[in-house]
Image (cartoon, rainbow, N blue to C red; front, side, top):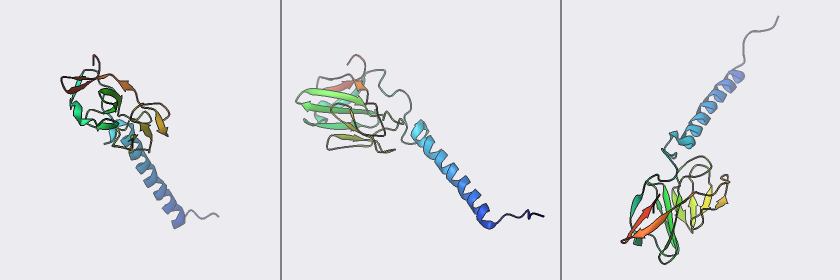
Length: 145
C-alpha cells in the first residue's frame, strides 16, 4: 500500500509557488498600465498641451514632463524636440533623465532624449516623436504645435 500523506517539503513547495505566481501577476499589472508606472490613455497627446516656459528646457539638455508624459529636449538654442515619455516596451512612464538618457523604471530601458532612439532594452522601438513649438515664450506640444 502507498502512503497518502504528503511530506512537509512538498507542501512548502506548493505554497511557495502559489505565492510567487501571485507576486508575478502583480508585477505584470503594474507594467501593463494598471499600476503606478503604467499609462492611462494614449501615449502621445491628442490635443495641444501647454508645458509652460520654454526656458525650463536647458540648451543641450532635456526635461521630463512626467504628468504630461512628455520629454522635451533643446539640442540647440531655440530648437525643440519632443517625444512621448511612455516606454515602448510595457507602457510605463519614464521617471528621470540623466546625461541625455531617458530612463524607464519598470525594466531598465533607456532612450536618447534628443532622438527618442533606444539605447538599452528591453524596449526595441523608439519613443514616438511629438510636435512641439515655442509660442510666446511657452512650449506647446501635441497636434497643431
